[in-house]
Length: 281
Image (tube, rainbow, N blue to C red; front, side, top):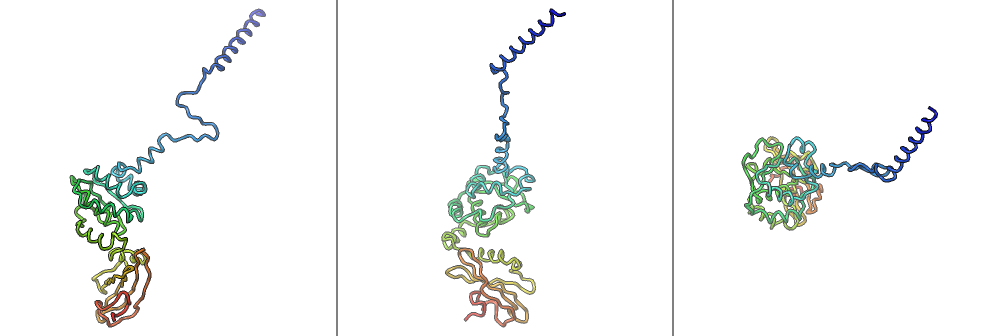
């Protein structure tokens, strides 16, 4: 037994030497595909970039509405311009798109200029639908021109989609759009409709105007070189006007209160001047 003990030690020493030799030769190199997880080296998520790109894609926008509407549509619309969106509608004409909303100011005056160049196009395009719409355009296509007009309507009203659906609920002729563009839109001027919208956004208590219910609520407007004057009038039965609130809206979209009538006055609504906030001279 004393003879075998040194032999065992010798065998173990030889085994250790062989292991050390293999280690020094690199036979235990890194596993293919393994990540470097040493301190200071971030471990990337292999699909994180793809997931972000997919959720901001047009395919995601036209996919499961429950998924993309639960977060709003802003991911797509913060990475794509209105012209990009119109091009996507053009290349997917048979896929209606449900849009909840877009970021404020998404459609700029430069975008409107580019969209005006498309309003006569009869090329097929996908229709746009609001989640509030009970109408769904099955087996229907829109046109690039109609969708450009729908976007322009959104630019003018400050809300997109501006109607429940770009088909059926929406009707804007290219001729009317050209008249608007040539008279004010192309110069960056606000129009009457936008001026009313801006006042209502600034003063939400005026949202009920106009109304034919008693007491009747009417809006009178008066153009000016620097914008518009508006009067939100509460009409009476025994007296023509019960009260009125007046505003000036400049072409740079600034809303300024310009006067108030807080008592009943014997002035017919047609004789009331929004600029003077009282009877015409």
